[in-house]
Length: 176
Image (cartoon, rainbow, N blue to C red; front, side, top):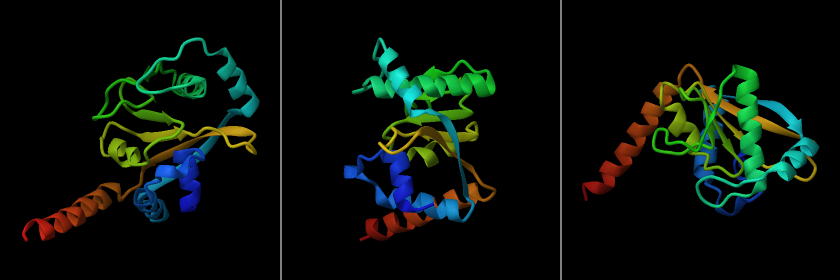
């Protein structure tokens, strides 16, 4: 895994506002096993195109197109097929509105271009088992993939160390 591969997962080829510090922190967490990464192939790009073409209504927060609606449908279908869950879309959860989630918050799926900070925001909640993202497909890709991030054994310790480090920096500059 490289920073650029993570960039492709979260920014779907639209790297203008890449948060490299967040991606690099996530990469280090993956390399240390603090965050566990895996991916699953979902559907072919042709099937994605067919779902895009079948989108009738566009609903959700902010600007969304048929491609984003198709990704959310794919995510809902995945949760139903895998866990027999009727998923919720864009409902409030831990301060954010994830694209698709299980009603109990165990599984979160973001779609398309996504802020990578959401991984730690969601994993910080003990109800969450994993956070996934389905990026828009690149021209040369044949399948869409779900990229899944879950807590490793030392996740809570790593998050506490991160908070302590940030607090120390804040206190250093706040005292002046």
